[in-house]
Image 1 (spheres, chains in turn green, red):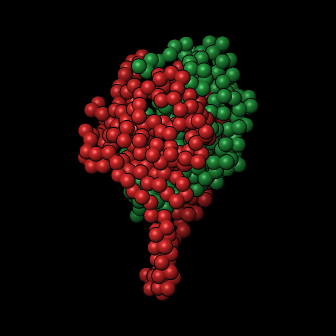
Image 2 (cartoon, rainbow over the protein chains, first blue to last red):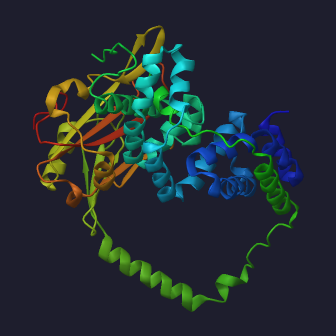
Image 3 (cartoon, rainbow over the protein chains, first blue to last red):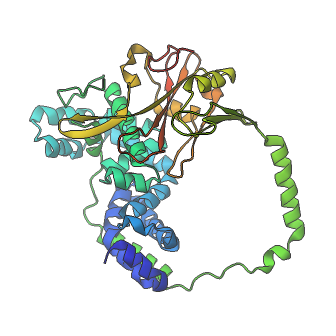
Amino acid sequence: MDDAEVIELSRRDPERFTAVFDRYGDEILRYVHARLGPELAQDVTAETFLAAFRHRDRFDPSFGSARPWLYGIAARQIGKHRRTEIRRLRLLRSAAGPALAEAVAADFSARAAERVAAEGLRPRLAQLLAAMQPQDRELLLLVAWGGLSYEEAAAATNTTVAAVKARLHRIRVRTRSELGGVNPLAGEEISLG
Amino acid sequence: MDEITLFRGLRPQDPPDTDQMRAAVRQRLAGEIGRPARRAPRPGWFRRRPLLLATAAVAVAACAAIVVPAVLPGGGAGPLTSGAAWAVERHDDGTIEVSISQAYDAAGLQRRLRADGVLAYVRFSRWIFRSSNGSVTSYPAEECGQAGPSRVHLPGNVTAAVFPFVKNTTDFSYAFNIRPSAIPKGAAVLIEVTANGPTGQAPGGFDIGTEVLANDLPPACTPAH
């Protein structure tokens, strides 16, 4: 039974909605934890699913999966705690952690020098993220941290796939520019001409 | 390597054990689900508060009389759709609201904003698609980023102050606000509206990109005047 069917059934039998939480609760909880930290993760996740339950009649069954819809609700709940998130990003500028290097390694079978370079970018990237327009940061993190596809991100942010691509393109260009005009890890520059 | 991947690496590590938190959330959700639905407001509410509603209506009317902006539709019937291409409204708080219905007459919108005191560069374009390393990507034609040193943008917090509101939605409602007083001295704004072109994308969508440029040199991709 797909999410749309579960949500449809929950309109007559509310208890059914707990199945939606069982499917996505852990994933959303981890995402909110990444965005806002342990102090707010539980409350914001609860508010996300409570809002989803109260407004389940607004779910568009044509999409099938409730995943982007839930991420969209989570994003709005997270947006209420923007100051907390910015404070966390400032901490990330200096916090040591292997996540960045691991991501590079997973993506590219990166060599040791590349991992070092990636870790060295952490403060600059965190600074860029903190200074981004909220809607750009939201989209970027839905894709980069939430793992949403362009189609899912478009559904989550109530926009078009084309708009998602355009905005991510601008974020790429700006990031490249902020990092000195080239991507220091790629060893190549994609022509835009 | 995609720049998005770099940001993926910034994600803080997951908590080692989420079972307790998840159980607490589930319990709270189950409590809400098991609660009887809230009663709808009684229909007599409006009838019993005529004075309050009348007062509210007068207040709304008064506000409207003060805030009514000058709406100046611009552009003309363009090649993409029909009707006015854009409209500019100046609000009492000093912000300027721009609504876009067609990606047409960029020069006209540029002139209109400059007449309102905003040194703006406006660019309307369509999509092009390129294949890079086997993956198809899409981006606006004639990327303004290739325009050389004129495309030096200011940090995101400046952009957020200058453009406090940008709306890109699937209901074909596209608008943004400009706060002229937040534009740093000597800076200019760049507005890029990208329309879905005849490339297999669903028609009718736009993306509005907004930036604050560090200087007033014209980007190569925008109208000269």
